Image (tube, rainbow, N blue to C red; front, top):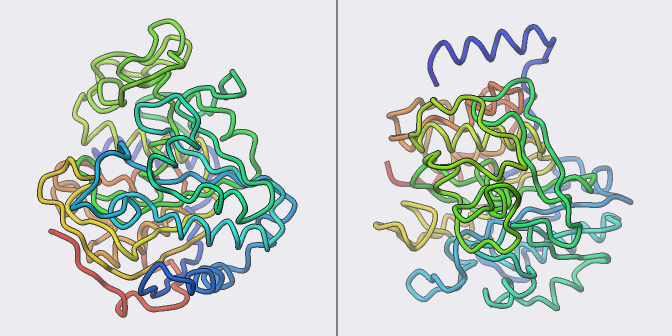
Length: 371
C-alpha cells in the first residue's frame, strides 16, 4: 500500500465519522488431535468469547469453509483435512456447538473448485462424512456458491467506505440470507497473499460463474470449470458485465497488489461475525499441494475470535510473524499486507497491543512458519 493510498483511506474514514477499528478478543486453545475431545475444546473457545447463544440463538448461520483446490489433489497421500482443507471433525464440532446454542438454520458454503454442481457431491469426493455433518445440528444445509445455485439470482454487496479494485461484488444469496457469517479457515501460508487465514478464506466467497476464467462475457456462466486467476489475480479480463466492473482498469496487474485488496474489499462488503482457524494439522510454505516446498506440520492449535482482522493478527503471531509487517517482510515478501488493508477499511484491528488474548497465551503455542 502506498502512503497516498493509506492517507486517502484514513481521510475517508474520518470524513465518514468511522470509529477506530474494533479490537475484539481472541481465544487460543491447544488441541493435540482431531479426537472426541475436540467438541469440548471448541466449546470452551466459544465460551471464552462470551458464548455462542447470544450470537446464534434462533438465527440463520452461514459458515464459509476453506476447501482450497480439487479433492483429487492430495499432499503426501494424507487426508485433505490434515493438510490444506479445514478438517471435517472441526466442522462437525462447530455444527454441534451451534446446534446446542440454538441456531435455527446452519448453512455450510464454499465456492467449490471448478464446479457448479451440488456441494454434497464435492464433500463426498473429499471423503467427508456427509450424513454425520448433516445430523450434527438441526437445520444443516449445504450450498455451492460458485454460481447462483438454487436461488437463481445474485446479491450485490457494496464495498465501504471506499474500494481499490471493485466498488461491489455479486455473490450467491447465501451470503445475504443470513444473520451470522462465520469464516472457518486453515492456518497456513499462501503463495500470493503470504498467509491464508480467516480473511483470505473469504476470497472464496466469489462465484466463478461471474469472476472465473470461463465466466460469461455478458451474463454469468452457471457451469464454471475454471478458477479466478485471469479476472482477480492478473486482471486479464473483466468479470461478467452483469456485475460491477473495475474502478481503475489501468491500475497494477500485480497479483500481490490485487488479491490482498480484493480480499479486504470482500470482508468489508460481507462482514465476518465469527472466525475460527484450524491449526491442529496443516501445511507450511503455501496453500495447497500445487505449491513447491510444501511441508506437513502439526502446530496443534485452534484460534477463534469475533473479528477476522484481530483473529488473523493473533494467528500470525502464533506463526511467528508480525501482523503489521510491510511488503517485502515475511510472510508478505511479494504482496501487500491484507490485514493492514482490511484495517484501513475499518474492518478490525491488527494491533496485538489492543487485542485481549483469552485462553492459552501466544508464547505457549508459537509455531514458527517459514520466513
